[in-house]
Amino acid sequence: MHIPDGYIPLWQCAIYYIIAIVAVAYSLKWSARNLTERNIPLFAVLAAGIFAVMSFNVPIPWGTSGHMVGAALVAIVFASPWAAILLISIVLLLQALIFGDGGITALGANILNMGILGGFVGYYTFKALVKYNKPIAIFLAGWLSIFLAAILCAIELALAGKFPINLGLTFMGLFHAVIGIIEGVLTLIVILAIERIRPDLIVWKKAPEEAATE
Image 1 (tube, rainbow, N blue to C red):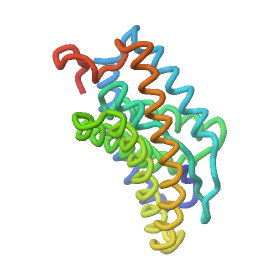
Image 2: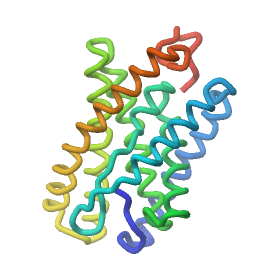
Image 3: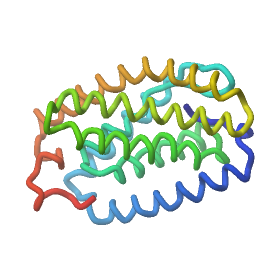
Image 4: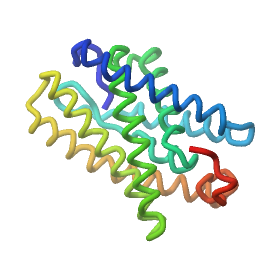
C-alpha cells in the first residue's frame, strides 16, 4: 500500500501533505496530553512490531503493494485515532527515509491512507460495535481499516492516471480483503493478550473519567 515517488502528481501530493500535516499536528497535541512514562513503552513496542509487519510487502499490479498496517490496533489500545496517526506517521517516515519503502513526495498520501483513514475507521468501528460483541468489533475494526485504506489508495492512483479505477479497486480490494482477515485476527490476538497481561494499559477499559482524552 506504500505509494512510491513519481506515481502521484506533485500538486496532488501537496494536497495530501496538507491533510497529513494538520492531522499529525493534532496527534502531537494528543501525545503531549496522553503519552506517559507508563504507556510510552507500549507505544514503542507497538511501533516496532508494526514497522516489522509493514515491511512484508506483497506486490500488487501497477506499482503498489499489499501488507498489514496496525492502525486499528493502536487506535483501540490507546482509545484514540490520533495515537494511530502519530505512530503510523513515524513508521512511514522511517521506512521512506531508511528503506525507500514508500516515497517522500507520497508520504502525505500514505499517512492519509494508513494512518488517518485507518486510525479513524478502526477506532470508530470498534467503538460502534464493542457493546454488541467485543471480539467481533476488534476483528472488524482491523479488517475494515485496512480494506478502506486500500480502496482510498486505489482511488488516489486512479486519479493520478496510473490505472483504470475499476481495475485498481478490483486488485487492491481483493488483495486487502484477504490481508484484512489476517490483520483482523492479529489485532484481536494482540489486544486480548495485552488485556490479559496488562489490562491497566488498555485505555478503553477504564472508566470515562480515567480514560485519556481523545
